[in-house]
Length: 265
Ligand SMILES: C[S@@+](CC[C@H](N)C(=O)[O-])C[C@H]1O[C@@H](n2cnc3c(N)ncnc32)[C@H](O)[C@@H]1O
Image 1 (cartoon, protein in one colour):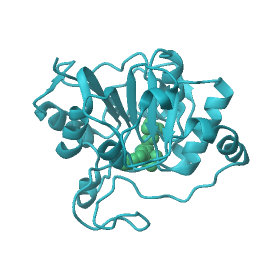
Image 2 (image 1 turned 30 degrees about the horizontal axis):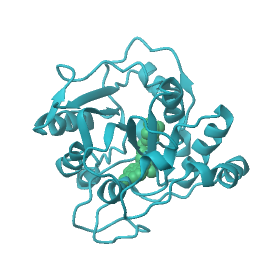
Image 3 (image 1 turned 90 degrees about the vertical axis):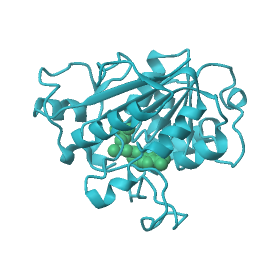
């Protein structure tokens, strides 16, 4: 995600929240791993990735946060099941977040839901530094970061039935048709997520790109074990904050769509 998209949380909802979306505000994309050519700089050239590794400056503050807080809050990737109780130092409901960007929503949600543990994946190093910095500033204890491709984390670290929830907010929309295959919300990834959810666990997605919202609705609705909590798009849950970036788009008449599905019990 572009640095210009990073934002602080705002509390007001603009009046025009249901207007059409705008690609220019959301920047990038997401996708499931499929056979094909990978973007430059990714490790497994035969696998299509949902991200490209972007250059980005890590600030001095972020670098210090890496040094001071990385050892406690970054969980190293390993192709072995995660011991979540050991990683968080407590047993609590576990929520996976894929692609937290600069972590403003992540930090907010972890603050308003202190009873839950948040395992958060992001490949963009300045974003990881930014979330570590927020963790330090806000004294948060219920976030752990995996600086790795979330798809590999799901495949190798998360056993079936290990998750209570999944958050995927403003995943890269990969606007061009030829790039749509990089989108995260596709049947193969959703099937993997559903397998890792406990009965009653949820998947919450949000996007500001209408064609992707429609794809999300179609893919999630087609997953046999998922039930939509709304008729189609869901009201924005209280815990998900409105970011400055999102608020700016809404004021310009762009839409945002939340989708919340639960795994059947
Ligand atoms: C458009 S940004 C949205 C960031 C944030 N959720 C927000 O709402 O501001 C999407 C982010 O997802 C990350 N991402 C995409 N695919 C990923 C993957 N497979 N594993 C981890 N992070 C991923 C990208 O690096 C990028 O920072």
